[in-house]
Image (cartoon, rainbow, N blue to C red; front, side):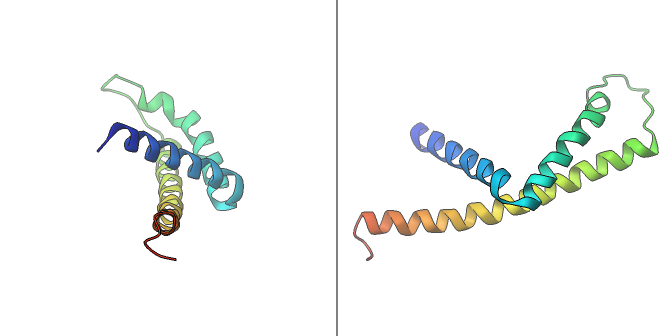
Length: 99
């Protein structure tokens, strides 16, 4: 893939995610909760010791973190699909392939 196209797509995805944070309540709440949870689980994830202890609360936080990430991924995928469709139609109209 052309570097310019890859860069364009990456920027477009970032724009869509930013829009979701502003306009989609479920996404925004999930993103906020993920940020809170990452503060709690980051020390566990960065621990390089082989003999660490994880509490039941840590396990619940890790599980909830991944659940929140799945919520965000689902919302993002749906939005990206819809936006890709709209962008494709817009491009085809600009190229006068369709009216």
